[in-house]
Length: 370
Image (cartoon, rainbow, N blue to C red; front, side, top):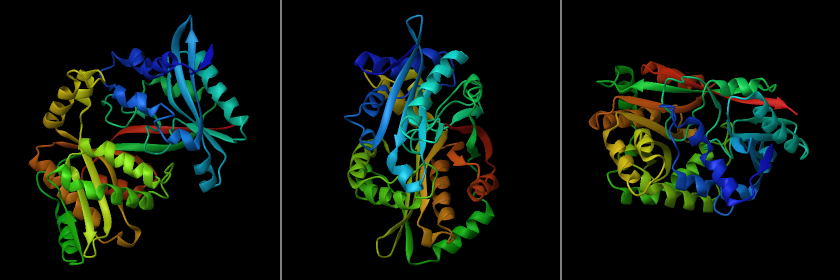
C-alpha cells in the first residue's frame, strides 16, 4: 500500500526508515537526524518553494517497508529545456513489488504533470545525494553520499530504468612528497604575481569569504549536471549553517591582486566513524563522537572546488592541490576521498589517476521515459 507523507509521524517514518533497513550494515552511515528534520520540512528548506514534490511511503502488513520522494524542478527544466521529473531518497526492502508500486506511483505523478522522463536517484540539486551505488559496497559511506545495498540497482532496473549517468568516487593516497610534475606547475603558477593563495587558521577569518565563494560556485558549476544557482538569500543561510562545521585548514582560496576570488577548494575530515557511534544524534554525546572522529580520522573528503573560466589552465588546480596535500600531510591524513565526479569528466579523472587515485565507488543515475 502506498501512502503520502502527511503527518509528523509519517515524516518520522520517512526519515528513520534507512536506520531500520541498514543499521546492521557496517558501511552504512546515518545522517545527522536534526538536519534531516530541517531538510524535509517545506517551511525550513527553500528548495520546496521552487520545486513541486511528493513524499510517499510503502507499507506491507502495516509496516513501513519503502520510501521515495518525487521532485519536479521547474526552474532547472526551464534552464535546460527539459521535461524531467526526479525520484530521490529511494529506500526499500528487497521486494520487487514494493519497488514497483513506489516507482510507478512517482512515474504516474510526474506524467500527470507533463513530464517526459523520470531520472534518479536525484535530489533538488547535485549537492544532494545522487545516484544508486552499483560498485564499491565494501567501502563505508562518507558525508553527503548515499549507501545502497547491491539489490537496490536490481529493483530499479527491473522497472525498466536504464543508465543515464555514472559518477565515480576516487580514493587517492596522500603522497610522502609532492610529485615533480605538480611541483613544476606549482612553481610556474607562483611566479604569477597577480594572484596569491589564501589559507586560514580560524573560522572567523573564513566568514567574509563564504558568500563570495558560493557566488563563484554558482558560476563555475553552471554546466555541471543537475546544478542550479543559489539565490543570494540561500548563500547567506548556507554560510551561517556551514561556517561552524568547516575546518579552516582545509579551505584554500586563490585571489587576484584586486581581491577577486578566482578559485577555491574545500575539504573536510571524514567524520563517518563518529556519526556511526552517535547514531546520527548530536546530543547528549554524539557531538563529542563526531569531533573526536574529525581529529583522529586519516581520511580527508573533498567537498567542493572550482576555478573561474578565465583562470583555467593556469596551474591554479596544482596550486590549491599542493597546499591541500601539505596540510593533509601535516595533519597525518593517509587517504583523500575525491567525492563524486562524472565519469565523462576525463580531464579531472586523469589528474586524480596521476596522483595514484583508484576508483573506489560507482554511482548510477537512472532514466526512464514516461
